[in-house]
Length: 234
Image 1 (cartoon, helix red, strand yellow):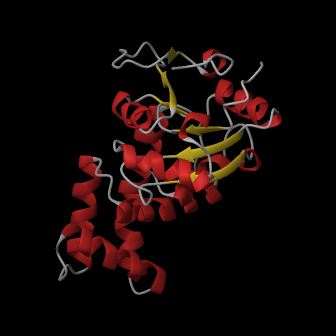
Image 2: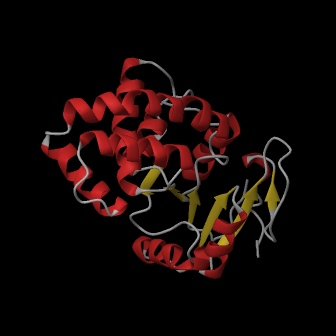
Image 3: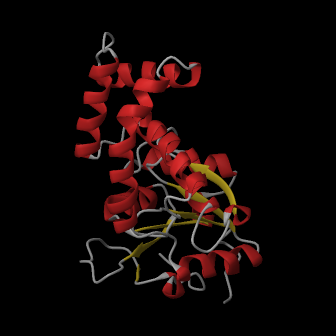
């Protein structure tokens, strides 16, 4: 597979792109919903957890929330799939226990892992941008079914860099990578995220797995083997 010189980096979404939506929604989310209440009740006085809970109170605009109220807020946010940074951080902490205990392994499509290895070997720098916390991202790739994929990945971005549906987030990523946006390709299954990346000047490809309906104006690939990295993608 040949890669044009202008593609210096590929930024990858996780859910629906490198990894199955079912893994996130049927394994990770239920595990967090089951484990988070006890985790917060047992560890809320620890400095690291206390700092996250302070952020949660700010995000919830409920500065007086006690532990039980926080548990209620977390349950509501998980039900809504809220992209709150404090929630994602706490979920990552709980998932770490699950990965380390062997309760589950991180799902990464075989075609994704194979092409990540090929692209990295060709000198393309790989990065992850997900609404899940950086900690959760690293855990998934460290404990994936295909082994530890972290050596392939140069860096990670989460919602601290900005909302995934805002062009400013992708401009900031390109600036952080010290690259022109046109040198970066973003892969995601979500049209609105790809719209934002394209507005920032990045090349884009929409992953459409499992016969999902295509919504958007971006080049489409059904798996990583069909990602047109050898083309001058608009």
